[in-house]
Image 1: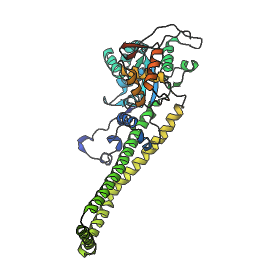
Image 2: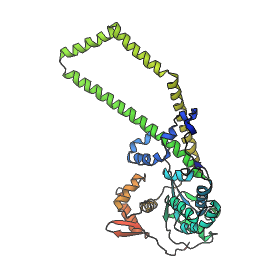
Image 3: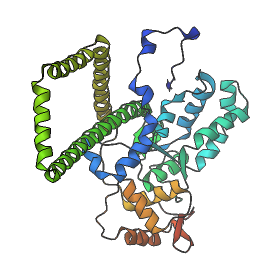
Image 4: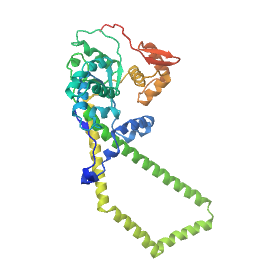
Amino acid sequence: MSSSETETPVPGGVATERNKKIKLESIIRSDDLVWLRDYLSSHPDTEKLHRRPLFQIRLVIDAERVQRELRWRLRHRRNPEARSDLQEACDCGILVLFAPTVLDQEIEAHLEDIAAYANVSVDRVREEWNEFRSRITFHEPVFVRPGSDCPDPKDLPYKTVCQELEADAVYSIDAHFKLMGVPVIAGDVDRVLRKHARAKSIELVVNLGAGFTVTISFQVLAELLRACRRGLKKAPSWLKLGLLFLGAAVLIHPQSRKKIGDFAVKLWDRLRDPRVLAALSALAGELVETWEAVRSSSVEIENAFPKGKRRSAIACIREICLRAKTPLSPTEIAAQMRRVGYASRSADLRGYVGRLIRADGRFVRVSRGKWTLRSLELPISA
């Protein structure tokens, strides 16, 4: 388990070359992906500013993976403010975690073991578990009877949650899931997700900033030219003639030309200052490293999560209702689906959502026009 340790000041205030450099990563954080994702989803025209997709991976996390996180937090973390790769990936929104409600019971059964391992009290373990638990969306799946392909019935709720929410995989080292035909991620994928989030947030901020600057600059220049043109059209002939003579006098007069030339030379000298050039060179180098980090991590993510079939509308609706934790209307659900990038071929998405909800027994209407998920225990043959 690795962590994203924050840089601390040098003791005694002694400055080093490393401290003097301001890294873009310290200004633009991976957590900025949260508002960047919202902004991009509400402004589809900005899609051309980032060539590669903005990933959001959905995993069903199992008890072993949670225990590993808690053990690192309670025994190996040196800086109390440090975040694990898994936590940072969740906080920036690139990773969404789900789990069946039975996970609570499994972790509760191991609290004493974790406390003994970390030499802390059970209450301390429970406190850390509750903090991490807030990053997991829990779902009570439909009861399914274990079939012949299920070596361990305790794994069945994780498989069912993965299927009902159409998650990308189960995050586990348990070999039983592969035997059950469930996609599994066993490696530390959260590390590459964190790397991608840090680089992607810088790429998006820089690209958006550059796009805004160019757009605004052109708009301002065009507006100034239009204003000048309108003004000159309305100006009397004597004023136009006076402005022409004034411009000619500035260019012809030796002292005026010298001042213009001196200003240009001073500006060029400042740009050639070694400190300015060094700063620009360092910034350019960091941006190149950022683009390469985005490219390489994108390839790793795409290889780890091959693009499968299109996610169904009902799975998207279930996730939205789970994460909302409050009853929603079909109109609200449809708006959320558009916000997360769900592309529907239906001309009436709100009506389509309403029909899907009414036909799915997992939903219940709690008030006029408001629906939410409910837990069912209906025996279904595997």
